[in-house]
Length: 366
Length: 122
Image (cartoon, rainbow over all chains, first blue to last red):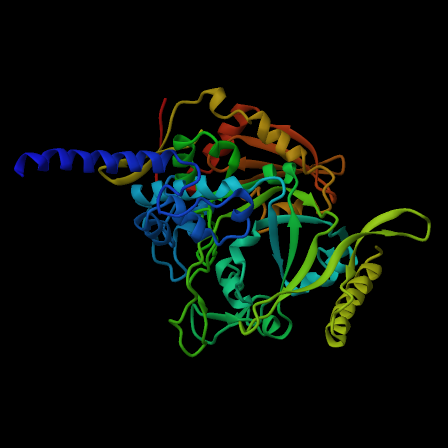
């Protein structure tokens, strides 16, 4: 029997290598796990971690998650960004390891494919901005020099809808790193009464968390770029030239800034689930964040949604839709129209925000 | 030109290689990107101050007023090229890439502010 063992071993080895080769070459199968590859359409709706597991090993995912709170800008020399190398308590962040950088690059190569024409985007906004969006204009600047501006664009940090699918308001605030406020009462978080600790704001608890759902044009998808701190971006461009146009160098500034520089968002660790239990934080929800390098206009069909804070009801409610409206003079403009099925109390609340925004704009001469 | 990080016997230092114009020239795509914000709804000041601004890697290094127009000079913090923009209430006005020599001088002016010593070569 002995002579048979070597061929068997050979065949087994060959079969294993062959199956690996087939697996790697088969576009219908995930290379890192035995399951079908999700389609481009499915990927818009799947949790990023699920998509990543198709391509990354568990060890690589651990490296990505473990990169949080590391310094991705050790080669930044400008003093404006020195504070970005620190944690909220003033301690130095450790530099990224080579393995963490490699895993992060792999992650972004996978997730960035889905930022394309037709991609479904979310832009989360503070409740104080909701009225201005509904009215179409708002007032910015100082009281001495107010400026009326249109609110018909999506700008700043954004992310695909899948990043926060199914999350309650608190989990969303954590996943998006919206724990940047420092005052006693904020739009997203309030002081928790303990140093370096914040809790979900009374504002969100009372009125929910709002976002704009926007479908990306090809131009907008091209203008949405992954914000990366310098070390990571330099390494990413060296690994794949596409990162030169698909990413933007953004270094962290401020030790309390939740911006990670890693191309994914997360809370900075000050957000607590229970104010009396300072160590009870929210779990990391891997994602890819983008920044709009140029504002992109709202488009017909965009929606304003609200999700609740308590997590007991994770469904979202459509508050308003952005639709063409024929004006008295016959012209057509796109405006936010309130959903017809809003409960009376909610309709009263949003009408109140609309009217407040309108009054501010008119007072400012707009 | 990004400063180079060097480990020395006295710790980490930054190294500034000898001046070459091409190292401090504003790239065309950067200039074009600023121009895409001309006529934006927000003022130039608001755009630059926004914590979510894509221009966060630019540092204001000079400001002047001329004939009633306000000009802000921005230095890209890593690549150290400079662009001067006209600050308007509606985004950016004129966008003027600065000569490499001026960008170099503006970058060198920040050297004493850096947390580590700068070794200037050449």
